Image (cartoon, rainbow, N blue to C red; front, side, top):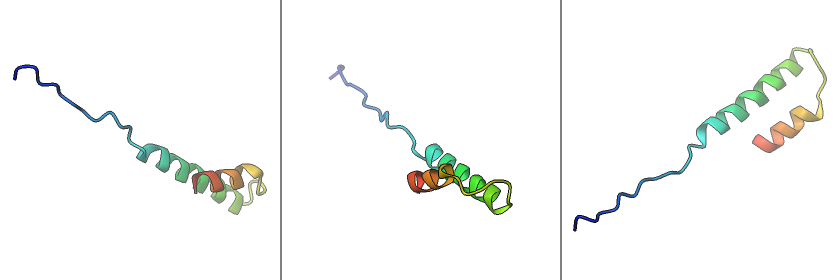
Length: 51
C-alpha cells in the first residue's frame, strides 16, 4: 500500500468576494447619502447583484 494518493480540497474561499461586494455597495450607498451623487443604476445594480 505504498501507492497512497493524497486528496486535497481545491475549493476557493468565497468570503473575499462577499466582503468586497458588501463593502463596495455600502461605500456607494454612503456616498449617495452624503449627497455626493445621485442614485445611479450602478448602486441599484450592485445592491441587487451582491445582495
